[in-house]
Length: 369
Image (cartoon, rainbow, N blue to C red; front, side, top):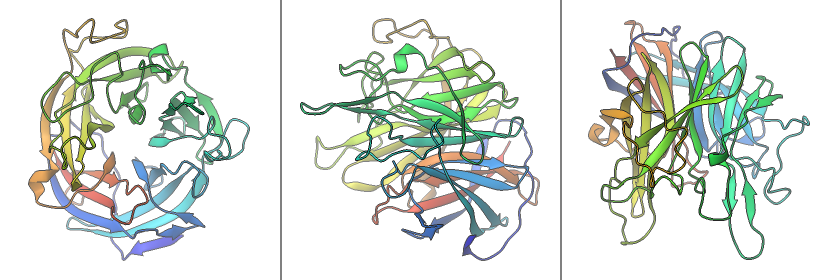
């Protein structure tokens, strides 16, 4: 066990109505290169809450480069005013079907995962995590690895993998998903019968990447049946433009979906994260998205050739830029225990990319309904 902080209180969670607004309580920074159980804590790309154990699970996107691909179980003590203590309880290796840890790129790039999202199912006591796969094209040695959805035991032991639609297969040509733009977000429905999974960026067939001006950057959100693993529906979600133009002009910029969260009443919270060269902070927006009237685009292979008629409708809940705080590379969010006043909490976590220039931030919000 490793403790980062002091002390506080925690209460159990409640499932209520979709949020109407979010109020920031506190931001906590886990020290850079914090060590726990001979692992480097960093790259935290997803977070989820287990009310049964009053613990959080957070996954690292370390591609077995520093240590084997893994997730952590942590406890967080907090009050209505601040986050008091972050206690690392366990570091659990993600295991292949053969029971071994995943190899690094230098060992076997075809089997190296890119972990991004993690969710817990209290009904089956299973965890699910997503991997973005790889699409690295060069003249010498191209690497093609499909994204994946894995179900595991809390011990890390592999249980099963979903068969993904053909449109999610990586290609050497400019078809299918883009590199580093695949399965970033995941969330169970409140009854745990569905698993929603989101792409970070548009597939080549669906539209361009987000730009500094509005364009048709359509991202897909997939609905899977958790029982049989079948993809039952797909929905079209339009990304906002990149928040700030890059400096210098023409350099790297991106906006995409790093996480989604089921909010009840057939609605999702969708996080958009924008980054531009020349600006260290990221712009994080949280939208409330309604699935009820949206068109199922599962049979549409290209949104460029066949535009969506009824896309997902989104309503901005919060732009973290408006809070006047530094916001890093936030990639995960989860509802958590309730506050002493009975209101739900929402937690967000930032991936520091193992860089000393970035921060592993933990955000605590009060949820208004």
